[in-house]
Length: 87
Image (cartoon, rainbow, N blue to C red; front, side):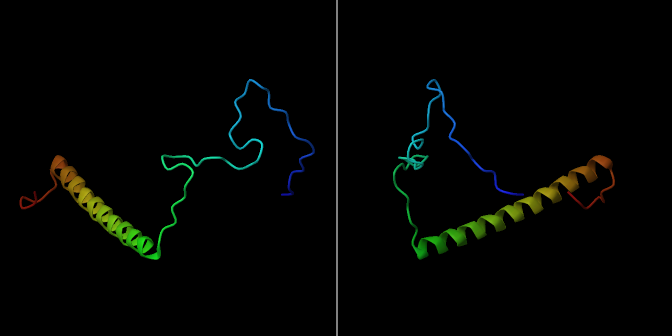
């Protein structure tokens, strides 16, 4: 697909609020509570984040597996097809 050629700038009516970057193309502030700063994480901090995310993934996977088992047992009991030893 060929690139679209822009032949002229469009005029934005005065009644439309313009964003802070409309003249320069660069926002004056970042979106969010920490405006005007970008935190660069250290390698140690990044590694800690990776480990915590991996742990969170493992916890969620275990919780989902448990939820599926519980759901399966519930359906089993409702349908009356479970053995007498399962709870």
